Amino acid sequence: MKKIIFFSILLITSFAFVENDYVTLDCVLHVHTNFSSGKDTIEKIVELAETHNIDCVVLTDHLVKKIEFGIWPFRKIIKRSVNLASVKKFGVENYLSKIKQINRRQNDVIVIAGVEVTPHYFWSVEEDSLVVNNLHKHMLVIGVPQEDLFNSLAVLGNELTAGKFKIFSLWPIIILLLGIFLRSKFLIISSLILLAINFPFKYLPFDQYKNYFELPYQ
Image (cartoon, rainbow, N blue to C red; front, side, top):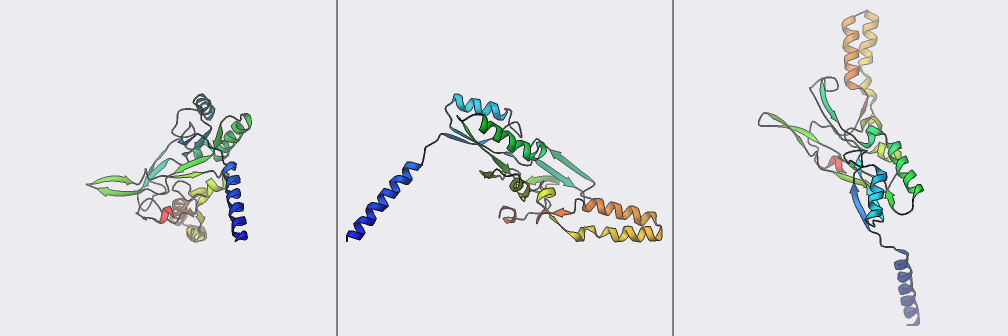
């Protein structure tokens, strides 16, 4: 019985210490800056936070803000792309460095690095018109301010750093070598076009031309 009472007192004391370790902060989540779709700089947002007695700001600028549609089978060549301001466009390293600088410069507002991602969107045809789906189906990645992590996120538009290299995509080199051996301009030009279609030879497990349902969000 004494052991039980002692254990209970110890447990209550432990909880009291844990509770005292926590500090309540007024925080604003999901803030965009001029690195993506926001209009203000990070410095300006920190100033506004100080003015309104905000202790913490969680930045979630768009990692990639790009949509693309290509015509099969030359989707990498004959295509239309719209690439708006984003962390990737201005540089992940620049984004994270700026946040670190501001946190070192002042102690009034904690700035937490994060990004907003659109893992997958896909095209469909409805009433003879192209429709883009899931473009605003977003996820937030917060509190892991490492460049490698952001570069490895499997989201459309991030294939160059997150995609997996597939050696099979280099198969047109066989045609190129054959064309050089036979001195065939047709084979050489055809192989170069096929290599351009496969460039940058990196792929995600999904693309924007099919509904992959829950796969991109795993």
